[in-house]
Amino acid sequence: MSESSRNIMKNISTKVRLSDSLISMIGVVVGQLLFFISLWFIGRYLGADVLGELNYQLSLATFLGTIFVFRYELACICNSSLESFKSLCNIYFLAIVVVSILSAIALIFDNSIILIVLFAFSFIVIQGFINYLNSLRKYVYIGFFRCIINLFFTIAVVILFLLDASSNLFLIYSILYSCVAIFLLILVFYEKYQEKTVLDFSFFLQENRRYPLFIFPSTCCSAIYLYALSIFIPVWYGLADAGYFTVAYKMGFFPIALLSQSISGVFRRDMLSALDVSSSDIRDVYKTYMKYMLILAILYGIFSYLFSEWIIEFMFGQSWSLASTIYKYMIPLFFLQLLYSPASQLFLVFKKQKIDFLMNFLFGSALGILFLINYIIHFSLINLIILFTAVSSIVLILNLCITYRMVFNYDRIYN
Image (cartoon, rainbow, N blue to C red; front, side, top):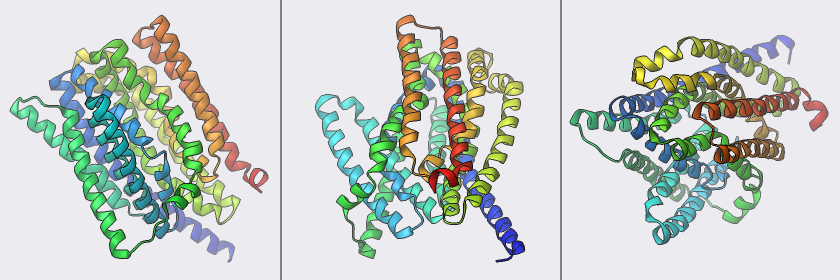
């Protein structure tokens, strides 16, 4: 192939990557925007304590959902549509076994957590299907599933507001998740029956054992970063402060969900494709994505610092000034997370789960020590936020340096 032909193919590939990212991004932004509208209604008209309680329950359930099948759901992300579908079926079988065991334990010892278990099951069913659609490059359908639940939840919250009625918001959200999950289970197992797909469950578990061995413990460690504040703040500082934190945290991570999460799957797929070509293609894909992510992160940081206080007080009122203070102290963390979310996929691409686990273990240990000290000394909420941001930022910078080295020393390290 001539040099001009290679350049043409590279330009076409870049345009395809950007269009895929745009489609995926639209689904995320609509879904997140709908969810944030519901949070605005809850915070503005039902109070910070109600919002704090909902976020507390969602954080517990989402964390359980993330580790529900020991990260085997990542096996759905591959270049073969048939293998991806087989992995999805195996994951659903595993999820059914796990939910049966956990539900039995919950009914025996504490039936109050049964709703969290069912939400976690629904969460992983939907997430597994989204991973399968990612392998098929069905980004429009991914966007649909990311939007539909939040759309109906927003409608439910608005109806409750108009009727001046109260209800268990987490129960409503769980029912919506369960309805979508049941539909997907029926759809997938019907397709399996129609196509007479042959599965080898024990082979699947053995073939993909690297996920529970390395990604699962790594996820447990990183969960301290993702969920600990949402879980500990209601316990240590009360539901009202938890509500203020929820607004700051959700607003801060909104562009991260919008940009990083939508782009991460496409970035991972393109990096996997580049592995089959050359190390120069790997570097080109990395530079293309990270260049745009850096520009967006800088713009986001400047905009956040200048306008975050005005936006929060305009949307929620002057009584929510604590939320804007928390937000400003967390801007450096949001900036770095925006860069690291797609870059973290490189541990999966290069199958360096051991390094990922060690870094997340370091991350989790550092934050665990911080929370232990806070339990003993009891910092003020703002001081805890400052220390959390500082520790997290240091570890994220270290992780970014490692992923950079993985890409630009690919020939020397992996060949």
